[in-house]
Image 1 (cartoon, protein in one colour):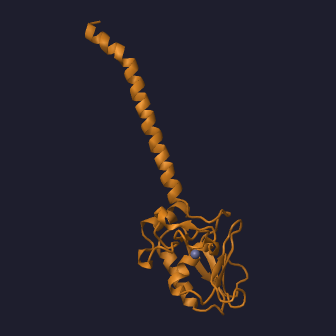
Image 2: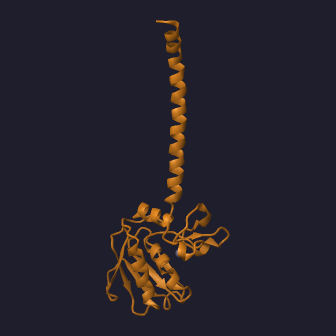
Length: 195
Ligand SMILES: [Zn+2]
């Protein structure tokens, strides 16, 4: 063994240690970063529930104001090409996944959704307090367990398990995103992740 070869031999041990440590640091940094991104991006559900059958059957009761808003919302969801789809069934159907009923009799005309925490069916109380031509697709999102995204400082008691907009989500479940920006990359990721 030449002296040169000997020096090489002597360095091999510490060098392996240094590279091993560097690899470990980089590896765990990548894992931690990945987990942070995925947990932030995937945090859209308001609650857990059993696996939902697809397509979701929807009844629109005959006394619901503006039934066309719901038909448009169903078409919009189905046009996204995700694994989550809705289909309208007869309004007199006794069995459906989603019941859209008029809130006039039950909730004084205010619109809200009873979400399927622990269940697979869901009731939408359709009111006249919000523009459902704008919001119906958002409300359908609640029927599959998606949460509201609201601005910091908004009273969260009116929302079921609200998330906050500044976390970086722009889309249909956000009160901070204009409608023309719905169904963009964040929604595609959300739909891909959950459905
Ligand atoms: Zn909402």
